[in-house]
Length: 299
Image (tube, rainbow, N blue to C red; front, side, top):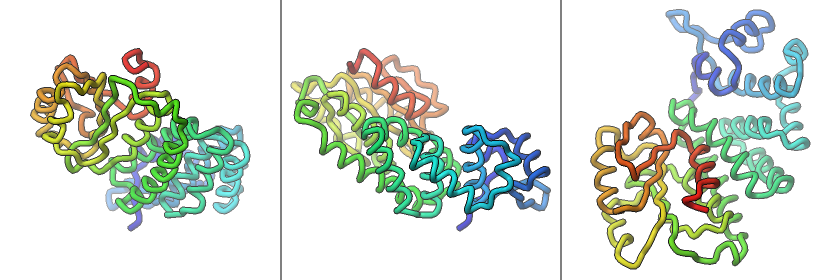
């Protein structure tokens, strides 16, 4: 099913101001939006892909008048060249989003593999994949892409991260105490962000206990038995716990975790007013990853 975007959606996803988009529509017909019965602009997947490409070339110093002379195929090719030959992260993220929309496995894997070859696994997962997750997260939250697209991207990235985890040296994998515990709440299946954090911590030599997706809270009780020590619990709450249940869920979690700090991010706690001093809510996965990398708590 074709997705539909508002001009505000496009502004958020491309970084091009709505006012500029309107001017370009009138002057160059870069995209031609559809109109609702109430004369509201709506945009298609093809419009989004075009404007993502335009944004990349604008960042590279191209003039909009020159971009407007390109066909859509030429525009795609120019951005693909940027992504593969020059290692431009904005171009790479743009091509990954396009491949996600089109379910184009070959291009998606090609971009990831090229980045890994040129920049290494850690840079690819912390910068490229982190940037992709940030951008695509808005599309997931607003239902701009479907479950199939989400699974498509997630599973391809997971394969790369699993391979990278296997390649970490024995020295980096050496167990240390106390460990950092990573898990997702019951019925929470959006695992990609947590898996990314797993790699990030492991790549820095941290001891990590990774419990994965959909873990009922009561199953944490034996984990926190005497003799097991953790310095931090990290979780990503996208669809779970439900907003009306988040206070109770957090209280139950705190009762189990004792004095171990809990850091969370995701859509579910985005407007949650947390008052517990041991629970920290980070506004984005990117910021959580940055804090985990630099905070003395996990160094």
